[in-house]
Image (cartoon, helix red, strand yellow):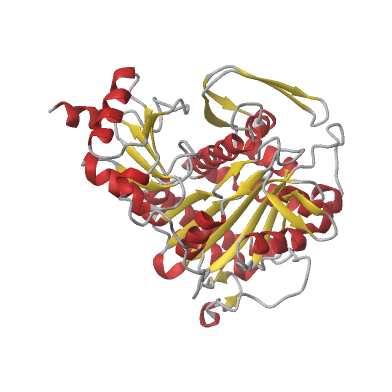
Length: 433
């Protein structure tokens, strides 16, 4: 996604979609939010005139936070049709907080693992994915806000499992790289997953099985990373010229499988903000935390690291937070940073060479990680330096020592590290001279 947001193809395709929206505006007017409410106070009303046969889209004047929920309604796998209440009553397998910052042309995305430990009203300790079935989008938004230091939630979007499957099928399938053999059967979750490793095109049913797989060491955290990968691939397919003739079918899927309290005017304003976003200002972060220990809770939870989260909220989501007391202020960054080195060159000795180099320059807590890397598609040639917890300063410190590497704010490497260095052949060439 980081690569695609800056490409001319992205802009051209969105412009075409904007023009098509003008022809289907009559259909958009039939969408009715679940509750009556005013438009964003941040909309520029001077640009919201809607004239017959044409649209002058509204624009955002100030940042907006949107909660995106992917709802699991797979509890009845043989049911052909769901009522709206049934379709959106399931657990939220995917939870994203998206912040659009129009002045900076910035898009910030925080992924919240479904197993995150929270306090639900009238329930007590629970997993955050249980908020939606207990109280719908309203309780889900309230729970996210309370977890994240009172961050404002302006609007929400919910898409159900069937909508995800139909969208992928409407696109003709989506190609992903499956890094390892996957075999998992869970009758209670109606999962029967069997995949061989390799890059392959999956239909909607198989792709949703892939993103729901969690039967490995990282559990739900690995699933969050796969979701980010799949979202990138879906965007790639959406932005192909061959997708344009499929737009009416895609819109039908949206009409039948998406629930939102965004008005039509607000949808256009959001689209405009995405249209003008800068790929270098796209930040994808996962809620920092750790797995619960067996001696803490009967169930497995993801426990939020509130110190690291406050820094993310302050930097990317406009939340004013109290200063964090630190006990390691006398330690230099090289001694405190936890750096994972993932080798994408295919030569084991290359990863070891980078670990040795970084340790020799003071980054003592540097180690090789076995995090699966797609050596053929995303990396291979160019080195990537990933700021895992939204701290670009840490990634830039590593980049300055290496003298090479594109810094990204994402959560696609070793999530338990501060920085992941994905070694490309360009870095090995540089270190060899």
